[in-house]
Length: 256
Image (cartoon, one colour):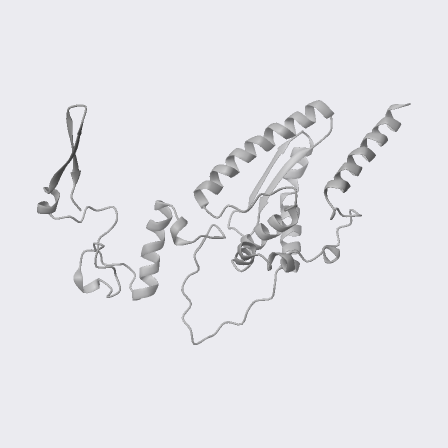
């Protein structure tokens, strides 16, 4: 048995395994995006991916990635918490990098990992793996991103007609991903609250500390002050209550 025959048998074995695991494996390698099943129809059936689709280009790209990659034997789900999602991204990218280098070394094939996020001012485009294929893919960045945006545009649902009589508040979208308030980080909340106040009050600045600029709906139990400032009076700062003793040290707790 010669080398070419051995490679052919190995490739057929690998392809057979993939087809057994993935029932929706493509039968051809054509580039006609219209022949691809509409991923957005499937995405709209799920609450999380439907919200992603409505968020714009970045969300459509994320929804397409989730829908096309989700398999019955892989019970993974999209992480809506941005902090956890960032940690998972870094961990999995390190794992991918190790895997692709191991594959190139052990198998001796040109292989790369390509990570792309369109729809941002500076589109994310990361490539790592075996050279020279890595350099080739980096040189094709513009072409790949254009083709990706074209494919996503064909998958995107039609825009819903907006009601001109309603004032649209800014959507809770961070880096193209819908992010509920309860899952925002401190930094994201510091950026969101002034923006929310701007749209709500019509003023460019919140006017922290002035009763005349405090909105009537602002919670009474919350001080009308910048989060970076200590809004307590000197008298409130002096209110300390004994909490408990531990190891002969008395710990104090600030009264609220």
